[in-house]
Length: 386
Ligand code: GLA
Image (tube, rainbow, N blue to C red; front, side):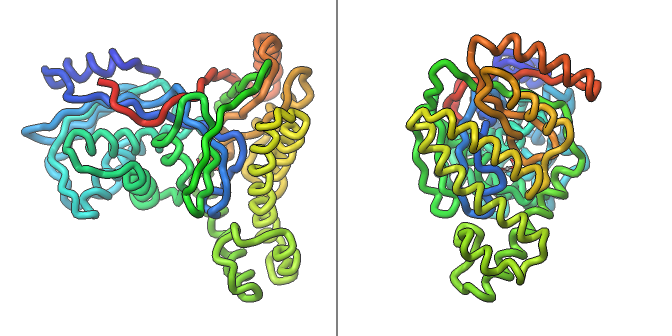
């Protein structure tokens, strides 16, 4: 259930009897193109959005109390010695971050925390990175730790790797931290250099559709994909010693190594090499407002995720296929880690209402599931709001 800034603040006062010292807004993200390229040190094209987490914090004289208002759940910790991952997922994003800070030799005092927000959980909008960043940014302010944004991004990523157990790339944390209003970020995940530019879609706009499928395989298959890419790099390095990641591979190198790679690994690598090229081409097309090229690139990205990287699912494929056939839709594709979540669609503004109505009806008929439209605006990264 979604909660507003005021509700988070009120809950904090109700729970602790005084006002929070500070409140953080930490956004989720979208990604226009470039999926699974981040941990392969390639390119991505994300943006922070106007949906995210509100987190209210204060220091505590007693235990640390962390209250998740959206879930109506709470955990209490007397100290941070020997922290272990919890069975209930949500607490790991907050406590995992504290664990990382402690492990880096930064001692964390007990604190009070209430958080909630308006970002749908498990829909591919990176609620997890938003929560990790909220915690890190919030504790940095509250305890005056003096961490840079880049340090905080790295702590969030490490918390996800080590406490949550998903070996994610850097895109989600980076975007949630560095986002700029109305701008998309072209991030080079190898050098971490980035460029922001305005998203100008004229009569078109972005529309997300939540498939309401949250596949249980998402995290295990995610790590499997990562390992398959690593295997590809390892095998190609035998022939081309300069290859340290798939970023160092182009189609010529890949084809020369084809016979040395298991067929599945070849397909995984091919998708990544081509997806990197698509990100760069997409940026060019956006700048030129070349909507024909944008359509082709989205189509190819979706086909790659479906057939080569194999991270889509029937519900997502159905939504994307329907979008592509609909008049006034430039294109669509699955967004995020895969196996469910949202599709991102670029649609003519005047057709949007009728499109949503139609796609909801056919999707429900086919799968008995709701396809929920999520309207987003591109907004700033993590910040203090109170
Ligand atoms: C998840 C991960 C990201 C990225 C995407 C896929 O959101 O957290 O690091 O790999 O999947 O592009």
